[in-house]
Length: 178
Image (tube, rainbow, N blue to C red; front, top):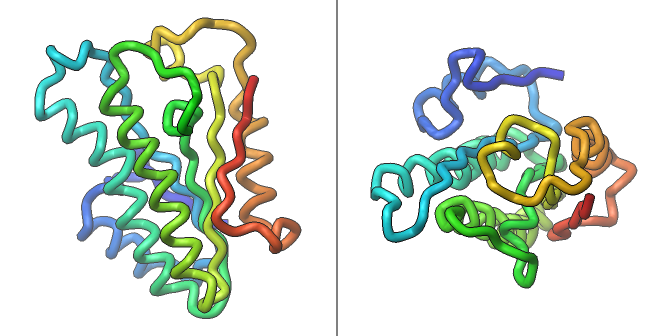
């Protein structure tokens, strides 16, 4: 298993860096897109730079990494988007999260679109949409602090979606309500 992140010096929203990092991979069987930024700010006070930063991290990175995955997976593979209940239609939204909600809603649409395009290539694309997760971003969100999922719970579901055991699924968005 190979992974890379911003802590490895790779900005997943930078096209050149994604291409260079992918070129170092011997092969690619699974991709988990798990980049996000949360800038809690009332919509009327949200700057264009904050909006762009949030969509760059949460949506552009998934586009760039998934595009590389489509090119490198050949015939077969799995892409998992880590989204959020914030991006699920009908789920409760919280004030100050317009950009985050938009980015996560975009992941839901991207998941569905890529599932269709991936089908003839044997590439499955699914999403996991957890509610509150006990991670640093939760403190920023202002969401009620009821039961929060543990990061490893979300990781287990993402791992299952990336595995051959979930082969019948593509285009699914699994809600994880804490």
